[in-house]
Image (cartoon, rainbow, N blue to C red; front, side, top):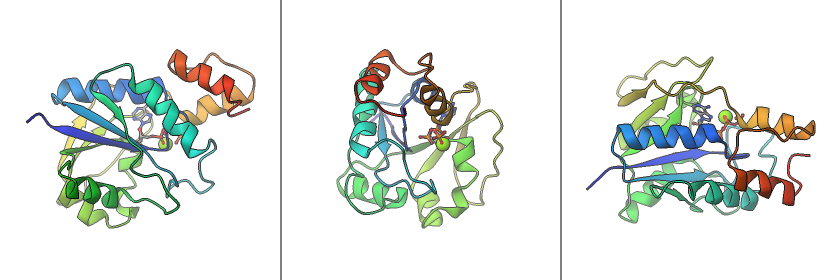
Length: 187
Ligand code: ATP
Ligand code: MG
């Protein structure tokens, strides 16, 4: 069976960088499926997400329409905080354990701060994507494949700042830009 990857994030909003990373990983590692998993309550964002969870999932769903290998997941919906290890274990229990965990170098650099990170590195292999300004070390025991080709200076933070300033020339799919405008997000 072809391997699958879980791609977690806040996706506030989903942008072309996320899609390029997922496409490149899917091509390079012959992935059947990339499951985009927006966090309902992102544990690593001190001020939380800006856009509500339902809007962030809807935007991910719109973007996932661009590639048949991409799928949006609502597995982290709910009141509780969600940790990646719990999500991986829930998928595993449902017979859908991801082979890979797709992650940017900035996020992977902080992996040792994640809830039950040792269990997570035992459970999945990581595909770590290079990102401008981010360096990382590989914790002992972690299985890591590096994806170096993608080097995109795109972030949701920059996109939110631009939209707040009234600039709509932002690197997101057209359907996502329409959604942002229609729902008055990030203004
Ligand atoms: P923010 O600026 O709000 O943190 P972001 O652009 O980093 O947003 P996230 O939702 O935080 O987006 O990221 C989800 C995952 O995608 C993380 O693993 C992150 O490292 C990765 N990622 C996001 N943008 C890029 C990029 N341009 N290149 C490589 N990885 C990326
Ligand atoms: Mg980020």
